[in-house]
Figure (spheres, rainbow, N blue to C red):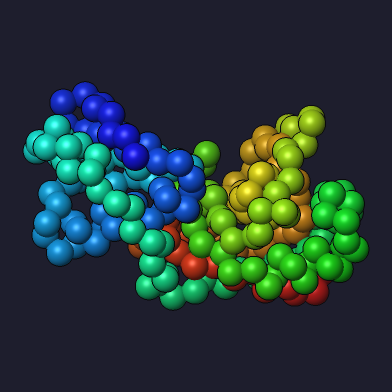
Length: 204
């Protein structure tokens, strides 16, 4: 683990894996909640966690350098269920990459216990982990200029749902009517880091 200064009041903490980043994020949230850490923002990414609004970044950096990373705790939030029609244009391609039938792709994906590792790309877009490493898939060689809102896709180790229409290169395996981002809702994002997620197959 390495803590790098970012400006006068922030640190970027680098770790080795996305699971370590999730574990560190959860531990820092716990410490802030119990009052042992004063920080304004804690923002996880694939292998980093950004802490902003620190009073003494150098002191925290020294503490973190000698810290042993905790295990990833079980989720504490309620599971968000997302109904999915597994009708994506890349379902057959993913089945080929996995060496299984399209129906088996649906079974494997729907059986996984997902967790939001971090958010980004677009408001409401969560990067979800939970599939075994052997099911990682490459991005499409040629990205689509338009991916419809509600598209469920795979890229690398992640599953994600496009909250709005945008370009994208993920392998699309399904669609959902779930609203990932609604500025009139509190909170606006359906998914946030640490949220457990389950995909529920529905008929087209």
